[in-house]
Image (cartoon, rainbow, N blue to C red):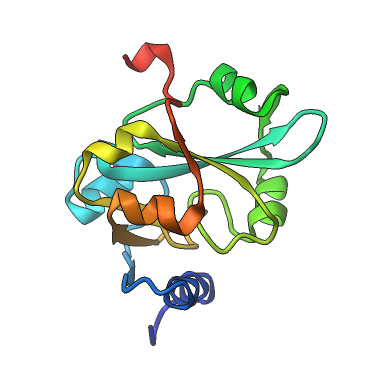
Length: 163
């Protein structure tokens, strides 16, 4: 943990408090996009658990979708799941709701209570990689750990374009 940036350290501490023996690593070349992350950690694009934050159009509640890096999220499906239209959240909304910047939003440790959906396609991998608080930090985990740590609902989230 020494040497981790403040946000990455926050994620590491959250993981430890939750009882997970997982290590946050910071990667100098960055992991802002799924493709960057996959290249940096030597995984397939599908193994990257990318986080996308939506905002309920009328409720203004945050909805976090953790999708396979190779998939596009079907916004209509998310609207169906939460019962209201959504908009892709602004950088300011993401920071306020999660406490983290776009490109580094982890699956845990959010500033506000967040509805979480997990892309069923992530479950096909033995290990996946998630953001860890900054566009330079990630951690490796099993899909089962992702479900346990987030309490998220596993569902089909990908766009029909990806099928």
